[in-house]
Image 1: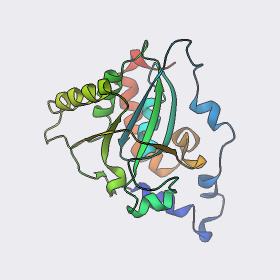
Image 2: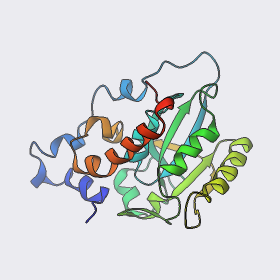
Image 3: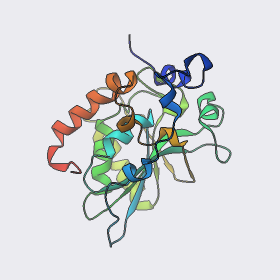
Image 4: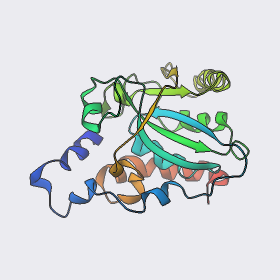
Length: 219
């Protein structure tokens, strides 16, 4: 039986689980900002990609290791109301999606290359869900920042249809606002590799990515 990310996160808020095992889930790591920004910003222009592919813990871990990526932040986008909290997102009432905001160097990696990775390492054929994580907050979505990004997103979505057996349902919508998620969500996999969800769900995806994209790793 698979594990839902919600099953894990709920524990951090229950008084009965304030012991050593789960307490660290809700603790901010002081070095998160440094870990999320492993590469100095280039002298040239940078671009931003805002992507939703289910649990942001999963795709954050993938894109942190992609060459040309300068910063990855987990957050919320595409909904109603300002500064939503994680609990509000989980209700499904705000309409926000869990997303990552990726700052990248276009001279090292293109937006289209980022999308090609995106379409391989989440399932874009399941509407409002990824595995056991179910709800509109887990929808597959690309929030484009320019007409050029919109065109690239449409082309990448069409191309993804050739590698998936079912129709690709990824939403393509204009970017409006990004709200950074709570600190304990940032850099989650690196700080919690021992955690069951990380070990069972994220680690296999990351292992596959490292093997398939060895020459594109940010090392």
